Length: 148
Image 1 (tube, rainbow, N blue to C red):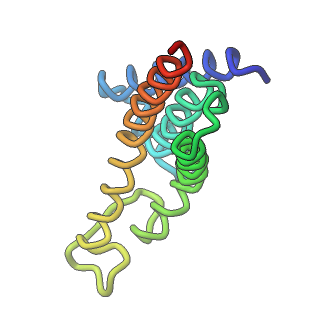
Image 2: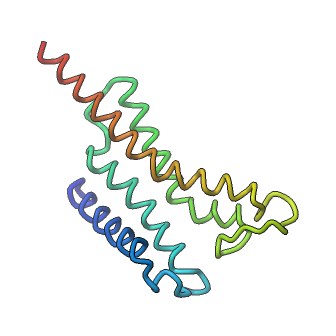
């Protein structure tokens, strides 16, 4: 699949996810084989945002600098974490609804585990945007250096 097709598909999925969550659609509360549809939809959204950023910059392959390679590898790690997010969230919460309780005994399902859960979500949302901006700046300065 080409980067253009992957970008278009990822952007389409991301748009649908944003619309569903911003409108508070009732689809989010449906059960899909015992799993809240909102959890599945947000999982697809996490994967889509990583793939959209990755394909937008054509796999971050244009820069051969150390920083460029680091950004490319960080994006690959983010893609892997987004694919694994559902399992990580299930492990942290101890249930398929990803609910945390102050009555939980131990770490799993506790408010302390929810802090890690939310931090993972923040990283999956913010990190690709930050890496995209850093990579764009890197490529700008590389092209600027090449013209001199």
